[in-house]
Each structure stands twice: as C-alpha cells, then as structure tokens.
Amino acid sequence: MKYFSTNRKSPIVSFKEAVINSLPDDNGLYFPDHIPVLDVKKIAELRNATLPEIGFEIMEPFVVPDLTKDQLQTILADTLNFEIPLVEVEKDIFSLELFHGPTYAFKDVGARFLARCLAEFSKDQNRESTILVATSGDTGGAVANGFYGVEGVRVVILYPSGKVSELQEKQLTTLGGNITALEVESDFDDCQRMVKEAFLDKELNRSFNLTSANSINIARWMPQSIYYAWMCSQMDFPENSLIAVPSGNYGNVTAGMLAKRMGFPLGKFLVCSNENDVVPRYLESCQYSPSKTIPTYANAMDVSDPSNFPRMQELYHHSFDSLSNDVQGFSLRDMDILETINRCNESNNYLLDPHGAIGYAGLKKHLKEGQKGIFLETAHPIKFKPTMELALGKELEEPVFVEDLMSREKKSVQVGSTLEGLIEVL
Image (cartoon, rainbow, N blue to C red; front, side, top):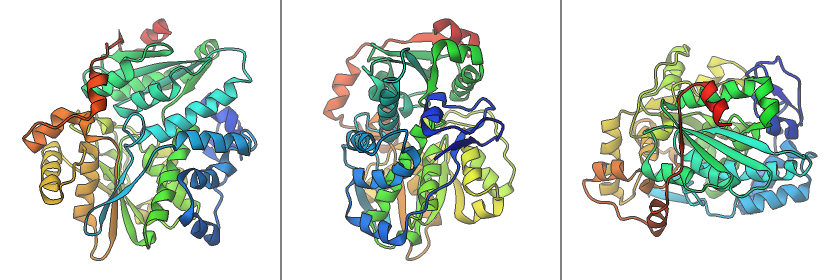
C-alpha cells in the first residue's frame, strides 16, 4: 500500500513514511492509493471474531510490509484491550460506547495504535522524535497516555486555554516526563494552525524530527474504522441503520466511511455538530465556508475548519451528489444539548455526554420508522461534570478515577498563538 497527498503535489510514500511525516509538504493529507474491499464471506465470518481479530483484517492491507503481521497483531492486542459495548438506550436506538479505554474517550483507539507504530519505527532511528498535537479536548489526554514513557519520543500538546474541561486538562497536563503541555491563549483552530505551520517549516521539521498525533496522521485516523466494523458484527441488518457521529475534526466519521468503502454493510451517516456547523451547512448548500469558532458545551467539537474534510471529499470521489446521498448533517445549540441530556436521563436512565447528546438528538429527528439508529458515545460524561450537572439539575457522582486525577498537579507552559512562540518552547 502506498499513500498520496490529497493535494496531489507531494511524492507517493509508504505507510511508515506517511506515519513519520504526518503531513505531506503540499499541506494535503495522506490517503491510501486504493481501498481494499473484503468479500462478503469474510465479513460474515467476522461476526464471530474478537475486536483485535477484526482490527487485523482491516489494518493488514494498509500497513504490511512496513509492519510485519506479528507486529501488527501485537499492536492491536495491546491497543484494543478494553470493551466497546453496543448498548440499547431505547427501542431502535443504540449507543456505541467508546469511553471504556484508559482515558475514557474514543481517541484511545487511534492514539494507542499510533504510539505503538511509532515505537516500532523509532527502533530504526538514532534520534529523538517530537510529537506535535493540537487538542480541543480528548485528543490531548489520549495522546499523553498513549505515548507516556515511550523511549525516543517527546510529546508537545497544544490546547486552548480555558476551553477544555478541568478533567480533560488534568489528563494532558499532569504526567510530566516526556509530555509537555502548551496552554495557548486562543482557540483550537489556532492550535491546529500552529501545528500545521510547524510541519510545513522544512528546517524546523528536520531540526526536531516532527510527527503529528492528530487525526491528520494516517495511523491515528484509520484504526478508528475498526469499531465501525465491530458495530456491524454486533447487530442485525446494519445496512439499514443511521449512524450518528458527533463530529469536530471529522476524523471519526471519515474512518466510518472508510470501513463502508471496504465492504462493511453500514447504513447512512449523520454528521452531528454543535454550533460550529460548517459541514452540515456544506451538505445543504455545497458551499464550504468556515466561520469563527464558537465555544460550546460540546467543546471537543469546537472546530470551525475541520482538518479531515479533504478525506471526506476523497472518499466520495469529490462528488457532492455521492456525498450528500450518503451523508446528512445535523447541528444542535447549547440549550438543546442540556435539554437532550436531561430528557434522555429521565426517559431512559441513560447518561449522555454533551457530544453523544448531539448524536442522540440527531437520531430522534432523522430516524425513520423501522430503522435502527446508532450514535457514538465518544467520552465519559464525568469529563464534562459542570455541564452535566447544569443539564441534570443535580450533582453527578464521581467515579474513583476522578479523585486521583484531580489531585494531581497541573504542569503547563503558556504561549501565544504564533509559530514563533511554539518554536521558542521547542
């Protein structure tokens, strides 16, 4: 398998090169030169397979020979060592719970896979790599946990000051060691811009051997397709389903689209956003027009110019008709997020986090009679305790892990929103 840039002005590279480079020098995104399709018999056999076994069938054609089959199996067994349950919330509506990993967020799958790939690749290098990552919430904690203590790798995480939850901030600022957190006096889009500018600076890239752990990195993005295939193995007639995906940078939902292109019988997608609704607006008008980021209760989705939009276009061959035939858009305002959390808890005794609430609300609006709906619960509700308590009108009981995490000392470096500030820290 080879990888090309979505801007088509950079050399074609191997999986290993794409992972280490992270971003092509033409500011595109790496994308596989073909998408393998599994036959119907193989997909049927996977209904009885384990999560790592499903992961192997999906990832093998994308990574071999840069990783051996044994290396891949070991990486997947280590990455996917927690449950991803499909839970019935109410009649015809299910939650795919992606928050049972070590940092209680869906980012654990991609971050752990990427960390283990880079650990293998770094054995061939005689110099330290620097991981640069921007986070609007859960990515930072997942990357920090996934890379903590990995030899030959240091991690620099950029996050917007005051715009992540307290628990999310603790997850990415309290480890120390090879993890450095930069508190940027701006929003997520500026954090993401700084990371991209750093990768496009060739001298800086060479000096610090930069690699990204954002979903722009192919090894962060593609493994997320595994839990969509897992979803197929857990339900009957998934091809008639509507899959609601809370969406910020659109790496998660485009990974689902990748699984569908590989032959898994997934239904249509509902991309669910908060008030930063650039893609839902695009799906209505065919006009892509980012606007200034709006802070919301669903802070991990406070992204106005999602990085993975070019991959969405690539997956549908740059055909708006093909994309809009398979994908719908939905957005929800803050006050409606609170109301949805409260209503679902009262009706179903099920706690939605603010992001999952948008997916659930999208299904309630768009699900057709007799159709199955699945929304992705992307993070543990306790990570958004103030918002949850505002929605529920009562105090939320804290799991054991919270007390330990909140007692740890925050360690961060404050920087402005310029590349020069980032270079100085590096």
